[in-house]
Length: 190
Length: 151
Image (cartoon, rainbow over all chains, first blue to last red):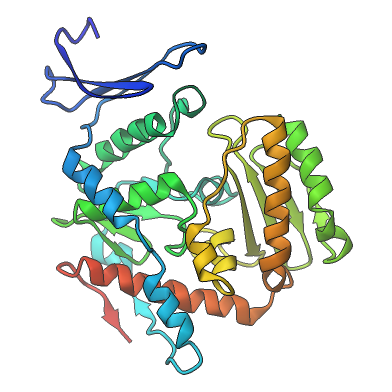
């Protein structure tokens, strides 16, 4: 942090403290993890940090994901077949960020990523600093790409709610007004 | 840890071979893979990262970029949506917890996944319908931007 000159702690929840620098207009964050008995960890990312409002939205959005699906299942015998949505992403948007989000198993499967596509990656801090610290890094990485305002592909089924990090990523995108269309998350102003 | 994963997976998922005709394929991180004539089971363990344990079933003929493989939550959803709603992938990081979680995962597969493992078309079609419903639901939550055309 000495290189950045000035830094302020913005959030501290055991065992992690997040520090935002203002030399770069709040667009960078360092996460320092400490767990007694384990070596300290340090992670850095050049993306914005979460706000309390976004965090509240994220948590609110995570409740009862299958309420409507349960209704559909109950009426499945009599319901008409769901309308197929016709959508050609390439024709409608042309350009995307190249980022693909999804469950780890989907992103790691052979052939999961196409030419020019990538997934977020970093040295995991989960085992040393916990899931909240890991999510802080994940969130900053995703925010960094969201700032590009270009569509992000989602490689997993929307019915798959079994992943802590993907659930949070989807909630983060929804809270920021992004729309899911034909396998992509599309920014509101795109 | 990877060796422990393979040993435990081989033990708890032996029923894939003995009861359903799957064959284990070469395993390398992060997957232990089983295949039948038309189906593939991918047992995922992120041994070098978060230690997440997960499982996928897919038709071998499906393009992974067009049709996501079916996960545990979806397979549970068809018979017990309330349990599916609560299901979260575990992150076992010790040998003891890995053994417990692989056994748990195998029990869930036994209970909820046989139709998928047998390649039952009806089960996969039901999942497709639910996926479309879910997509419509997501679209309805953020309606201002919509370029979708309905057939």
